[in-house]
Length: 411
View 1 (cartoon, one colour):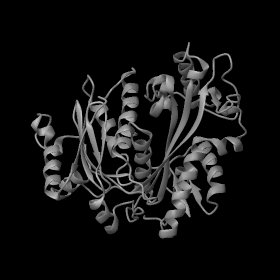
View 2 (cartoon, one colour; view 1 turned 180 degrees about the horizontal axis):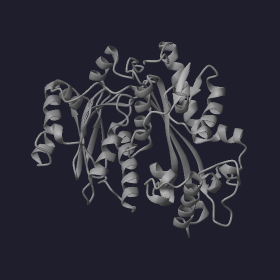
View 3 (cartoon, one colour; view 1 turned 180 degrees about the vertical axis):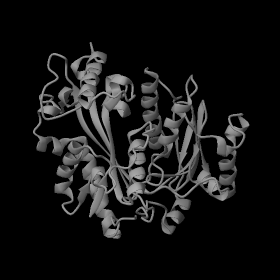
């Protein structure tokens, strides 16, 4: 089963081949350098999250090659630095800009900046993690992603009869009903969101679409967000809760936006406003009212000109009006982490087996060895890439059980 890796870096290819060899022995991993015409043009990684950048690469190289393509986006998150260096980990020393430095020069400068910014931070507060997001895309578009959890006719009928639960917070009541569609609004505390920050919020609101929830529409305004969403019943029968969904979105976006702003503190108001949508006509009214919100506020002349609107309904509107091209290649996404902390300047850097931030990274839970001191086989077993690869291997096995020809070239 041939699978294209979205890299020509021989070190990463070797590492990925070693990791997947034990997980999927029948998988044949190729690099971009193995393609007949050499590596295709490199796409611009314009995403603000690991998931977005991995998806960009997987789709671009999948389309260019006609093959199933596995891409990853990896980096280091340091809690004391509000998640930095994050998606610009490999170019942190230059704030994400390419300057022609060699990899060795960048690694040294990146490490020096991290140690400098952590001066005075106690060892127990230097917690960090390597993050790896893997995206698997099928370039020709013929492949159909595995069905996602949704309401069966039986559970839909049960949902209509399920009880409505009421809970209270300090100031507002909240309602929940299995299978219901919700209209949600949440607001910033004391500042407007920049275009870059609105994109972060939009990506976060769409993150669970088709896996944990069906997003009818989301509109990110400068100081508030409108979201119409229906949680999807999971294989174990559980329903993701609205409080969980809101906490996931607000926690992630607060961390990422504070990182962009170089600050810490509260981004969102504690409360959110919610209502259960009772009938189809009401749903249509709410969706269209929300979709026109940027127009009423003078941010765009039509909804289609406003970049921070997404969901199933806007896609449907665009298709009807001929504003949207072919659907992008479907993608499977996973995320793995490798926990540890950054050592003190008196104890790091050390080790010769790793690269990047490995010589600074003390591996949890003992914090006695850096990532660069681990034997390569041990590192491959523990690393963030290994964690993500294990999840991806499970998805690939499930995929092959339903579509044995999934990895045939679409060229």
